[in-house]
Amino acid sequence: MSDQDPYEFEDDAEEIIFVSKSELKRDMDELKAIGSRLMEMKPVMLDKLPLNDRLREALDESKRIKSYNARKRHLGFIGKLMRDQDLEPIQKFLDSLDSNSEEYNRRFHQLERWRDRLINEGHDVLTEYLEKYPSADHQHIRQLVRNAQKEAKQEKSPAASRKLFKYLREVDEEH
Image (cartoon, rainbow, N blue to C red; front, top):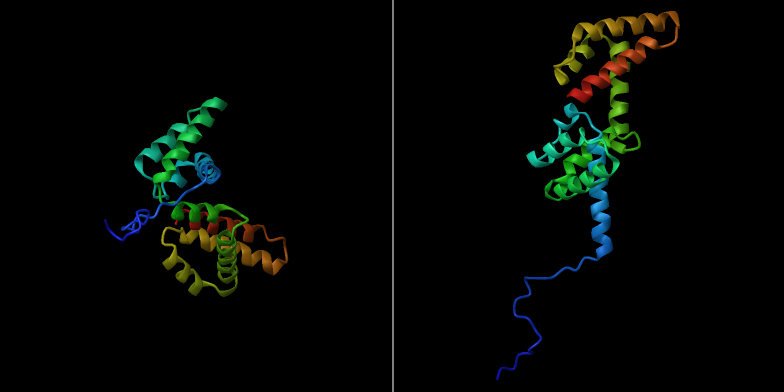
């Protein structure tokens, strides 16, 4: 007989991690919450996310479901499908849309700086902006900037400045 303890395992590589049932439920609820936010998004926004085909089909199908109970069951199915997804890029994208998140605030302040620079510094900044956002309509931006500059000189309320900011945000969301 060997001197080895019969209860000692030779291969410690297989470490078993026990997860409580409550923790599994919390994880599933978190996946459902993300799935619920995705269900409310427009297809154009979903196109920006790295979703697998099955999850994308389920999200598209959710738009047709009207019954409360059926939507609830479907949300559970979406949560189950999300187990196979890489959640980091999805969460980052959702955070960029959430007004309470740090990412949203960073982007918001960046757009404010672009707006202020476009109004105050002129053509060179527009060229810089168009390099970063080539899909932007440069003539439309020029018109909005001119209107905002005119309002500032006349000390009117900044309606054109708000329109410029709104357009910059739309371009940023498309980007």
